[in-house]
Amino acid sequence: MGLFKRRSKELFTVPESGPVTSPGSSGFRMVVDDVFFITGRGTVVTGMVGSGAVAVGARVTIERAGRPPLAAEIAGIEMFRKKTTQASVGDNVGLLFRGVTRDDISGGDVVLT
Image (cartoon, rainbow, N blue to C red; front, side, top):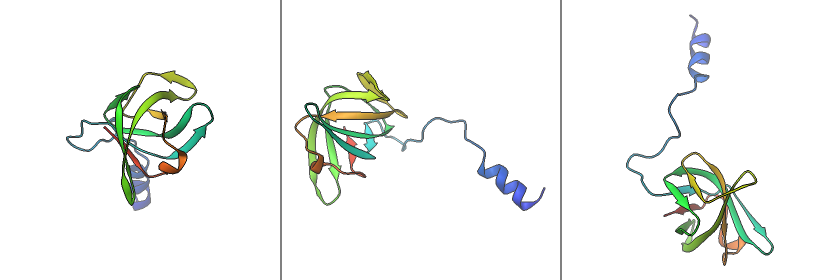
């Protein structure tokens, strides 16, 4: 088997394990992809849950680059136009925060419990 065939087989093989999490991580962690503001509702951050789980009403900390951490409470969770009460590893979700402005959060910030 030639080098290209061997390499392409390795590159296109999908591991059968679930989402990758860091060893020993038990708390919720999500990196913010995008931020939206919905009038009358609040600020929504989107991203994929990297580790742990979270539910509506949970108190979280938002780690922000170059700024002090921000404490917030999750007012709602939505997965592709479907409201839910919890999110866990591998879920692509939108987290709704009240009392947090769009300027308080930006892409790349990390939501933690």
